[in-house]
Amino acid sequence: MEEEFKEEVLRGILAFYEGKRRELIPVLHETQGIFGWLSEEAMRVIARFLNIPEGEVYSVASFYNQFRLMPLGRNIVTVCRGTACHIRGAPKVLDEIGKALGLKDGETSPDLEHTLESVACIGCCALAPVVKVNYKVHGEMTREKAREVFQATPQIEDAR
Ligand code: FES
Image (cartoon, rainbow, N blue to C red; front, side, top):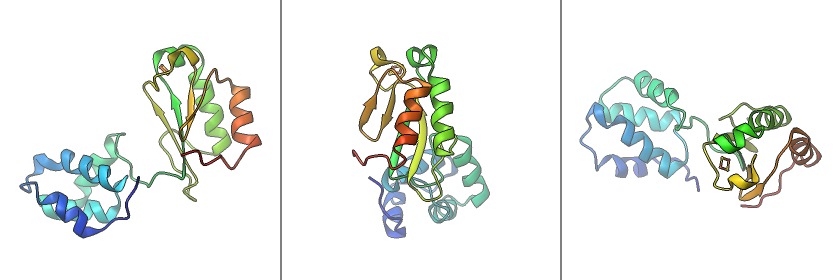
């Protein structure tokens, strides 16, 4: 669950570090672990602590796709792109859902309603291709099924 950014919380994390440039990635991971994403404010504090330019923190955070530069949406739509799902049509399903939500992989809608992300394996390969909406798994997805789930029900159920 995301926590609202509080500088004192981040300072509590940073207290366990020495303030060396090489600590940037672990600090970013831990910060995201607490707040759910990396805000500009958080990156500014990290840059000051590590004594490196803010631009360097931003470019590292934006280079690696495990770092989020936007908060997660209220509904998390996860499309599996693992091998079993890939060979059974996951790219088409991702494309269809992306169109329905107006999002690319890794993006969150400006109203913070949805986040679309892809992962390596959800762990239910027998149901491939698989999509998870919050905690609900939808198996054997097709473009048509994706359209039904994401267009007929634009307000995705809050099943978290
Ligand atoms: S590869 Fe998609 S659930 Fe395992």
